[in-house]
Length: 236
Image 1: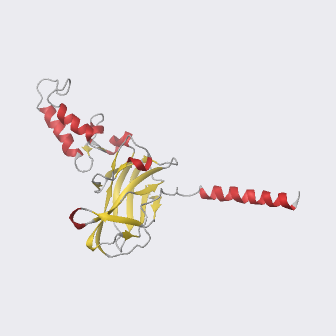
Image 2 (image 1 turned 90 degrees about the horizontal axis):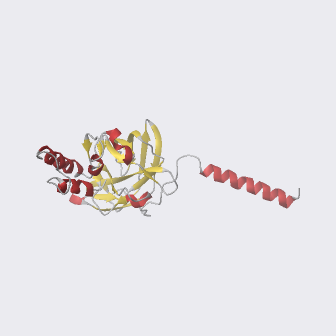
Image 3 (image 1 turned 60 degrees about the vertical axis):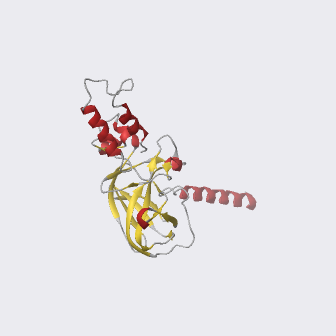
C-alpha cells in the first residue's frame, strides 16, 4: 500500500473514531438563548419553572415562551419532549429573585433520574424581566432525561437550588397522578395541573358535572360545555 493510501486509511479511521466518540455520553443540548458576559449580580433565591407546552408542536417549538411558565413545586410533573435529533429532553427555566439581578448568567443545571445523572446544561444564558421584579431565563433544554422520579438542581450566582420532580411523557401523565386539564378529560388524574390554572379549570368541570341534572351536561352544547371548552383550551 502506498504512503498516500495508508495516510487516507488512517485519517478515515480517525474520523470514524471521532464521530463515534461524539455520540457517546449525554446528547448535546439544543442551542440556548446564549450570552457572552455572564455575571453574578446579587441573587437572593432561584426557583424552577417549566414552559407551557403545545402538544401539537415538535422539539423546542413546543415550548410556548410567550405564555407565563408553570412554577414548579416538589414532585410536580415535567413533560418529556422529543428533540430534533431524537433524544428525549425536558425544559426548565430559572427564576431569579434579588436586588441586583444580572441579564446574563452562567449556570450548571442538571437532572438526575433514579439517582443517576441523566442530563446537564452549562451554557451561559440571558435573563428577562419577570413579575414582581424577578428575572427569568428562557427554556434550558436538558436532553437525555427519561421518565421517572427525578431531581433538578442548578448552580447559579452562588445559589444551589434543588427540587424533586416527576418526569413523564404527556401521553402517560396519569402514571404520575398529574395531568394537564384537557388530558384529565380523557384519563384518571388525581391532580390536574397546567400553569397554575389547570386544577381550577378541572374543578370547575367537576363542580358543573356534579350539579348537572340527569345527564346531557356536555352533549349538544349542554350546561357544562363552556367549562369543558375552557379546560380543552388550556395549554399543557
